[in-house]
Image (cartoon, rainbow, N blue to C red):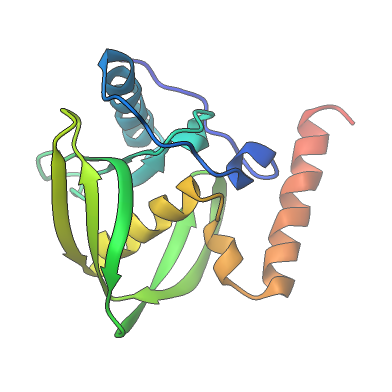
Length: 172
């Protein structure tokens, strides 16, 4: 396993829709393992393939705390098939938008269908932080960032900050 570079906004690949995975093979499983190692090293609780430059529908999640055993969840081609009318608000952050956090309101519970790392069809009903994390990562697969759920003024302010940062790092 190896760590991968995490794309930061304003990289336009983060705004593209990821393609479905047609076959869960060794290369997909290797990417999932590398994504998991990258997510742990960052550290984060979720990572979508587009965040590491792979425009395919794959997600890694692990909500285990530092002193708990790791409990990775791999979602391939995930799709939300039901969401509750009840809403919940969590302060979200993103590895592609480091050091920025904002409250985001989403459905409190979701049912997601996906393939696991062996290609088997699975279904999961999630609530709380896991439901929020799944929705956040599936948004990435659809070219949506968590800042797309906040006010336009706040979103533009964050975007401009990262554009300025990218120009500085590029020596412009």
